[in-house]
Image (cartoon, rainbow, N blue to C red):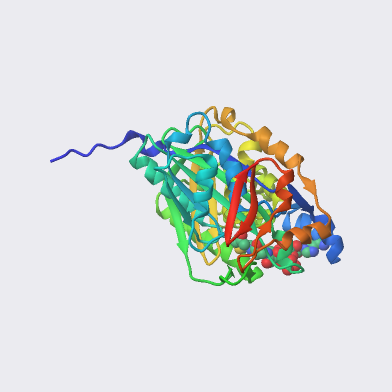
Length: 398
Ligand code: CAA
């Protein structure tokens, strides 16, 4: 009989590299507030949002994903990638995985499996957990996880100010240089209609207040299951990263958790446990599947000396599925961040007028095979959507 050996690397699997990308343009929410006759304090304090990333016509989930992933596959790691898992709520095709385009644009090896996952804003966490399981099984291989979304709601609705877009790419390996992801999790699933997008709709349908209530309920239940499944105690967790449809949601969720566990922390102490994780979301907006990991990237880039710290993560996807889990930051992680590129990419963005924003919002989407050449791509370097013809999207790297 074969003696089964425990793989010593199984418990060190985690995030080796992480980077994000967002659109090159944004709308200042002060512009939206003025146009909609709303006190801007509602956006700045009520939602905790300042700027909202708006994709141009040549930018979509594939170009953002390719941009983010191009930074995490360097240093000889490209040929180790045996699987690419693409998580998104805003898929561009009902059949073909968006990751297949990314696979070509990044020049990944042809014996790499590619698949797309969906469950609203949650699916990137399922992708991460599956990636960890695959790497535990084949520790010499790496798995590329990409979360990429464009959050779109109807104009002139309360949800309009919570749009945004972004992609986060993570390379999962057995010897991670950023964070070890622990196997203990707490999951919670309930069939509810708080936010959804029927196949015929380009924008999400949402029962706004109910969605925030479901988020809180799912958080408490996921936490309870996390505790039941031998997760870390609240006092062992140093920082908290939440799914951030808008940054104030994370602040409220964390206050709720502190109350639930009777942490005894003051509001200032509670808020300090997630402050560094909110910075990017405040100026990018919702990026659905990418949002929790953008929050983690924000903590890594803005937090001080995190080595050895335990980071709690709460993933929430409407509909709904939630998961609570934790990761521990690895010594020397600072040397493997892309903080400067992240900061520069945000500073170099262009502010849109309200009219330009509406023009971008009405993106070309031919339904009859008609040819559309995306002229704006000519002025941009990097991955772009060049045209749509015969119902086919044509991507390239300029
Ligand atoms: N100054 C300061 N604050 C102000 C203000 C002012 N002048 N005016 C209003 N506010 C505050 C309000 O008091 C409120 O804060 P509290 O919740 O702390 O009371 C906050 O601004 C929001 O204002 P409203 O209560 O009037 O809410 P709204 O009608 O603008 O809608 C929303 C807010 C429901 C979040 C809406 O933006 C929405 O539907 N967003 C999309 C759905 C969403 O993001 N849901 C989150 C959970 S679901 C999820 O997480 C999945 C996902 O990604 C979508």
